[in-house]
Image (cartoon, rainbow, N blue to C red; front, top):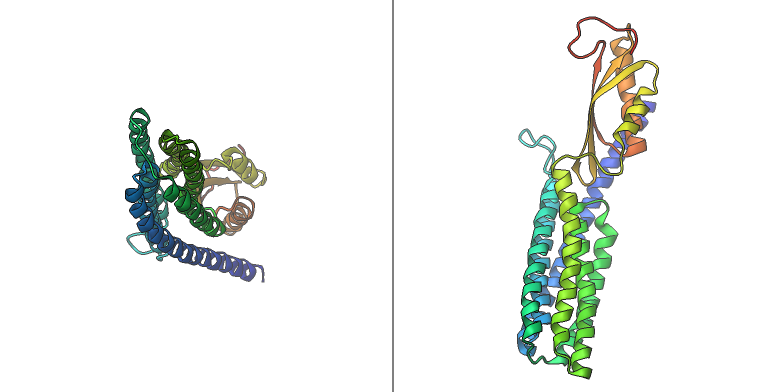
Length: 312
């Protein structure tokens, strides 16, 4: 009965992961359509109002729209089943999507900072009313998109990049409204450039964090919230397991963790006992650490040795 319960549990986990990706794909498509429509409006008003902050926001929206399109494509690819060529499936496309998104964000923000710096030295006249009105609408659109993405993001790096995009947009539109009011009330045209720089600095910080996390996954570093020593101690707490070595832990994707290791069994251990220990370790790793891809090599003597051992 117990193996059947475990099989049902694994099937439920796989079904949950599929449903999460399906929800993420639907949410991303809706947010993409909303931001694409708003992008066209912002770009038109940016040229009409001769506003750098609106044009900067439009360029940022282009980056956002492209990023959301990449995110949508990555989610679709990540949902495809494993094949002979891609034995783990295409789950890492969402990590690559996050890498591309973070790079787009960083490059866009740096470009806006340079353009705004020029405008600080040579400010130009700006029509404030369109800035304020579009800023209010933009704040509503970004807040709506942000809330939708947050609800379905889960652990996905790709979706987290989208959340960062929308959070940056929401903060940016708020500063756009402030800039527009400063120009309208105080005729302070440099507020347009200052608002652009503040928005861009926030984007640089958030995109850099996403990039560093993404690179860490691609380099297969140990997940920051899991201790290898703690896992080693947990496995070695079984008196019938004499040693744990060649222990490796990495992220296949942001929502999937893999582990491989060798375990040295006590002298006289049978293959049946070894298989029981392997299943116990897998269950412990999954329930305690959320590790869902585990490969364990059982040894009756240390690697390279030909003689059996009876102690550490």
